[in-house]
Image (cartoon, rainbow, N blue to C red; front, side, top):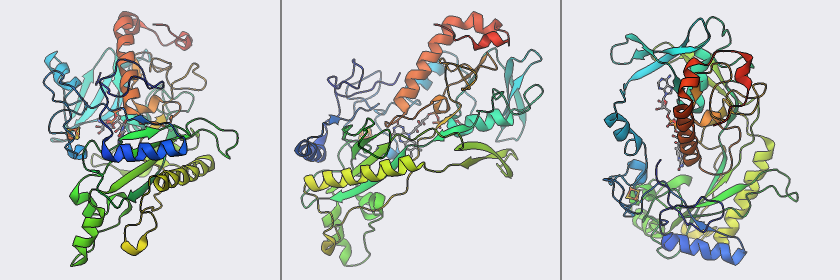
Length: 415
Ligand SMILES: Cc1cc2nc3c(=O)[nH]c(=O)nc-3n(C[C@H](O)[C@H](O)[C@H](O)COP(=O)(O)OP(=O)(O)OC[C@H]3O[C@@H](n4cnc5c(N)ncnc54)[C@H](O)[C@@H]3O)c2cc1C
Ligand code: SF4
């Protein structure tokens, strides 16, 4: 899988890491603040190389990761898995919009029907084993669109759970500036370091679960001028230079990433009116931030401000216009839940190896299978689960290819 780098001493992380990305001037400033407050911290873990791997270069801290990494350092699948998969014979079809997962008379999946978005033609692909990975909105939408004989409410949905327990991570950001340059543009943006001081449930709080505090970097000069995350827009005209000098290279972004509760009524369904450009029903999202998460995120925002104050940032110095803090609406953008995995077909959509309880040769391998959200970025966990599922399919391939649709599918399988 994509190599993850981080600090090997971190008790929350597996061993075998590459060396971490240095926290930089900005990170060390915030680390001192955390220490002053008695909070632990670690250099952030990343799926970004700090050493050569294959023909990919290590990160050189140039900064604009969100526009794509020119060095191939970020472990996105276009540079990790896909080149190898294609070399091994995988037939990759792009612009293929899957309309339906098909099922035979025996209740087993037989493949998928997709629409070629260039020509509008429909094609059927047949498969002995079908693996879905359209993520936590696309996958339930496709399962619900796959209602057919024997599956009137959608595929893999005999218990009505497909689409439910949608989660996003509760989020808040706080922007802060300092009166000295801290090289905020050097290094990957999402996080320099983090603290999980408030990660676990604390009975003294009025909420359950907890959050990570991530110290993020800025994104360079254009980002500064455009107001960073809190829209402190640089003015036009003669004040522009003053604003820019006060803001550029002096910015810290603290993310509060909270664990989002899985709530059954937060869900994806099929829209009854809106369609996509192929005429297929659009996904309809119903989501309300749980009151628990609202309290959690408010507590987290206060801690982020506390950290900024401890670091000596210029919050509230509004006379200079270098003020931080803007209320950013929760939730965030990590889509999770909706086809939860579990130990019983009564309360989950897949078993612990991402295998559908209802359709034994159908696997759901994306963030929809997560039953809880944790308070960390999800993708490395998703990749680990995908690799685990791939190993399971490889080992049990013959069994899966002949597995019948019977109540015995409910038996929890072993590796
Ligand atoms: C703004 C943003 C920032 C993020 N930052 C981070 C981060 O810093 N760290 C982290 O760990 N995670 C981050 N994430 C989350 C991360 O992007 C996801 O966890 C990850 O992309 C999930 O990978 P996936 O392959 O399962 O799903 P996706 O990457 O969402 O891929 C699903 C694919 O399925 C396709 N699809 C859907 N329906 C159909 C259909 N009917 N037919 C054909 N194709 C279909 C979609 O077009 C898409 O290409 C971020 C997400 C966002 C939106
Ligand atoms: S900072 Fe980002 S864009 Fe630059 S090399 Fe590192 S990962 Fe790539």
